[in-house]
Length: 124
Image 1 (cartoon, rainbow, N blue to C red):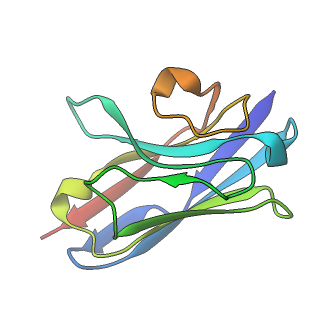
Image 2 (cartoon, helix red, strand yellow):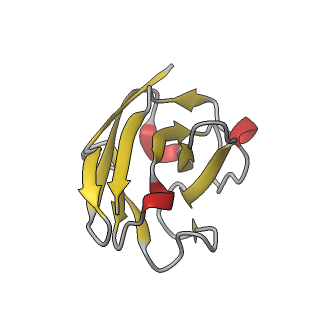
């Protein structure tokens, strides 16, 4: 089992920044591909960043590319999401997720473990 706990969410004005953290405990974190998803009210849960087991491969959809950065610290068992130049369309609940495989995952069903989610609200 892997337990994931997100932190760092909150409210920010448009153009601002937030840094989300996700601390993992349990199963060997360093062998897992990790991802960040978000879900706005009435919408599907979408992948916004993914990182493979050693940080050598990253993925971002066009909606956040150039603004969001995913990284990991295997000593601290933590994955980060740095979010810059936020806009109201980024408002959602953000979820950290872990795979049981080394590589990138692009769909929610490729991830086995999920955090509880954390709210990010961007006001105009």
